[in-house]
Image 1 (cartoon, rainbow, N blue to C red):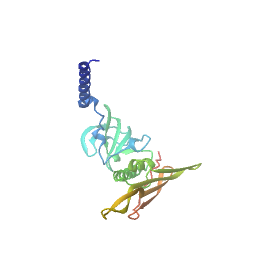
Image 2 (image 1 turned 90 degrees about the vertical axis):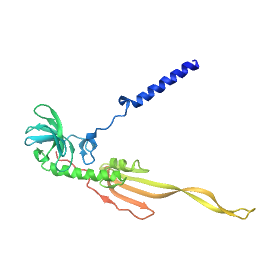
Image 3 (image 1 turned 60 degrees about the horizontal axis):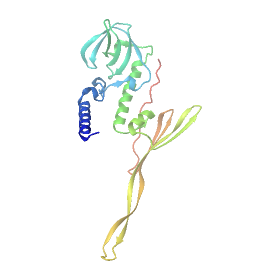
Length: 244
């Protein structure tokens, strides 16, 4: 291939690459702003099942958890899917109104379930997940967290030990933080008589160790070993066992 032809080909590739980076169609998909509210717990992120509720009396659906634009009204006895919890006074649900399928925020007081404790359970779920979110943001752990939540907070463990029995699984994870430490010796220059420090070797020293014991993928104990003394261990509620 002639040099001029090669130059034109490389120029064309560069132009296409710059267009791809600039064009919205080639950009990485963005998460919807609707799902970015830090005070909202999204059900599909924490439960591997769908929760359905029943509309006890006509329920107006709004565009935000604080109200906003009215999207429609769910008639009484409408079956809706729970999508998110925005606190004690707002659930985001999906269901059919008179004219279309709507996803909007409604008052929990207008909903019902076969499980009479569903509001209390969902309040507990919301409170727990807000605590877990705080722990993950601070790269911390607590008794009652699941192993998946621990990974989101601390990453993959340094060491693992798992025991399988007929009753389930148990074991421990260890997170070890190390630092390289240089060791020196004092050397005297025989010609000048001056002294200086010389590195003799480098060792890897353990600075911090966090050991998590678990049963059936739920943390049951946390042990911390640090040079600056023991840390505080938090305890949060274990995941809810649903009754419906």
